[in-house]
Image 1: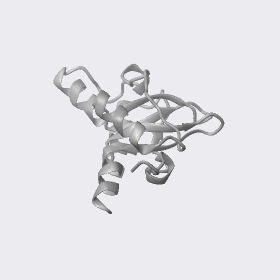
Image 2: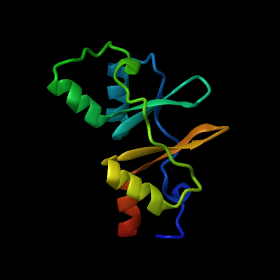
Image 3: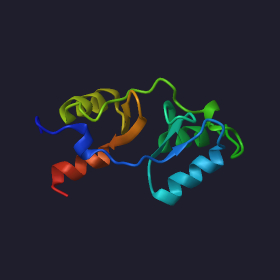
Amino acid sequence: MEDIFVGRLMSAPVETVRPNATLGEAAAQLLEHNIGSVVVVDDDGHLEGILTATDFVRLAAEDAVASDVRVEEYMSTDVVTTTANDPITSVADTMIDNRFHHVPVVDDEEGVVGIITTTDLTAYVSGR
């Protein structure tokens, strides 16, 4: 895996929402696309945060949410990112160390260009 870069394995395009989207809209997007996260971006496509299925589980457990609440109130904003040119071993280590399942792939000019997930890594390792 040493010679493999994130850009080769990442999923793109990325499902995104704006910070003012409702949690109901974000949840519908997760279900519609059978994905585990949506990346929150500004109007220029630059990263603002991430909202994951795990966040929804936490919110449900806390009985803390209504579907009309805005995403920006519950998204994670301290997001660890990677670039398409980073080695896959580096992002895999980051995912393991932090117990992340999703890491947005960003470009300084283009904003969010993809996402690397544990599913992407598993598919690569299994040869799919």
